[in-house]
Image (tube, rainbow, N blue to C red; front, side, top):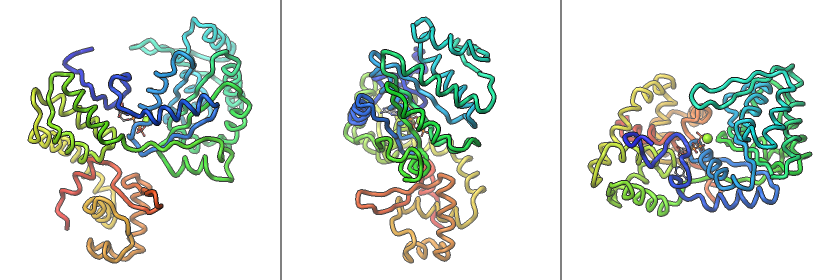
Length: 379
Ligand SMILES: Nc1ncnc2c1ncn2[C@@H]1O[C@H](COP(=O)(O)OP(=O)(O)OP(=O)(O)O)[C@@H](O)[C@H]1O
Ligand SMILES: [Mg+2]
């Protein structure tokens, strides 16, 4: 690895168990589920670490399981799904293995074209089919996988995307196929919580109660703290415990932001890392995003922007329609406030959280935006 570019805090991809912190309980839950042939729905806020967790799971089970990771975010219809699905399978199974040979034979019998990535040489498959044929082929591929000696895990990341396909009843189709399989188990992962909940816990939908739910939240603070200190010291840096404490609070322990902040601090400082160095990096991170944040302001109406700022200044808001809140920030009537709230929620600028007692609170979604907003003048 290029030493200049190296950092033990990845922010874009999974680098292996050495750079992965904790999630032992979640891994155990997933392992128990897949071993008992129970499919799982994995849900969290964006950037909390779902994809990382899934890659870590794949790494752990690679000896005993054939596992296929499929990110369907870029797919727009059933045909795209089939192509992404086929490509992920041929990439996951070595071509020279028994299963690999069967899979290639299967694809070659279909009308398909293969292209190879110029950089890593990975094959990518495009099948040319009529609309209804796609479903049949997905079913056939799954049946082929079901005949293997090794159990098969299929991970569908960004699963909420299927609700955007023009083909109707995609969920009903998948549910029927999945039910007929003996050895293939699934994990469905997604960050759009409302859509995911609707797919899996609406009694009128085909997937109702067919999976077990796993909600991913923040990594335990003490565990993350030890991990960070250890990673810095393993690479000739010494970081004050107080700095790590501040960093974890500032990032709200939201995995991606913790990784990003550590990454910057690691890359831009040497030897002993103190509070001043950390504050400087935090300031830089916000400054880099400033132009984007101003475009948000331009995109929103004045009442929406005011509400977003008010939520940031409060940190979190529980009684959103209380007179105290909307008069403190001059937010107009409660009806106007609710309209703005709905709009900010649908744009993912804020999120709604339920605590253990079912009490609702609202928070700014993006941690950097939150930290930037709370520093703005309040009026
Ligand atoms: N347990 C962990 N320890 C260290 N780094 C992690 C951990 N989990 C995730 N990360 C890193 O944090 C970043 C964000 O995580 P990830 O992409 O897995 O989140 P996500 O929930 O899939 O986000 P999205 O909803 O946007 O797809 C990634 O770079 C990932 O490698
Ligand atoms: Mg992800």
